Image (cartoon, rainbow, N blue to C red; front, side, top):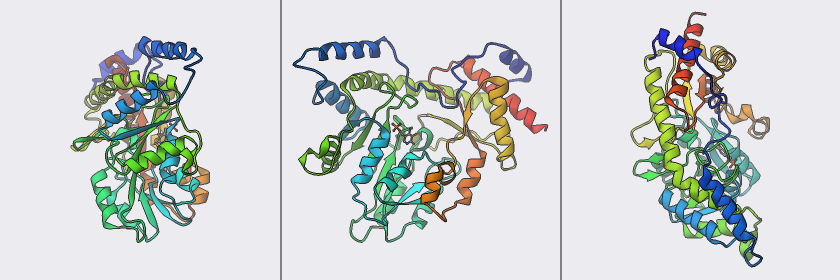
Length: 400
Ligand SMILES: *Cc1c(COP(=O)(O)O)cnc(C)c1O
């Protein structure tokens, strides 16, 4: 932990804007290489025989490279992860009343995609150390109507996929067989699980290239991955007006985005190394600060550290946690966010659509968690500033 005198010195120095937001707006960063890829793709498209067509090398190459990176057979590029979540739920062919189990501590998108396809959201709790769907709790919530388990690889780390897949096998649906396990990896590109990358396990996985995520394709974009040939074909059809075989619309990304995606994917190890360097350095800078529980990385996971998720002690829930976030911002210019409260409270519509479901464990956890601004370009100086600010804030709150 940084000494008090050294903290004063560090905090007297210059502030940076890189840590001013809890979730910085730019996840991946751009170099001349991305800019050149954009210009080159636009120039080449000016040829009237070329145009901005879709069945083109830029998109095919990006999809192949992305599939290879995740270690899967198929990657299908799309215009955003929200779209991909909808497509994954469409492929389940839910009947009214069919249930999908979704962690309550989550972004709103997965639950919305269930409701969008006429399904019923059944919320589950998450593990207090990993923030991932708790397999025991998932199993307790299975009914004869359950069709799928829908873990989110929360804040950059993998869900316990093997446990969830085993539960899915053990509790088959009477008509459709084993439950499907669909992963929302919008925050978790590049994360590892056992000897695989996130995107390999489960029937399919959805990634986001939105501007805040681990890499980006000009602000929006996404991909689905799967090893299932039929499912891949279905996704490709839905993306392109149904391919004559069923319902579909236009969910495609542009070839300019795909060209940028190829460059970003080559640079992804650099982004991930940056996040992990900042996170591991932070673990050391904050070690020994008794009140703050630092992010936990189980042996079978390789965390991508999309967010740096911490907990305050039970006695600091709500009031002191909220004070901590406001002091960090007002006094030190460091952004923190709460990612995320249970979606039945954070998103009124989801509360309305899931009446009577209230999970005390998730409620309590959300009152204690906070994420300290994280970005792959942060330097040791940035990190020392952020950690000094956090230690000072905790000491102030301790004495109140
Ligand atoms: C960002 C995010 C999404 C939505 O991604 P888009 O590409 O913006 O549609 C979905 N789920 C989670 C967990 C996210 O963080």
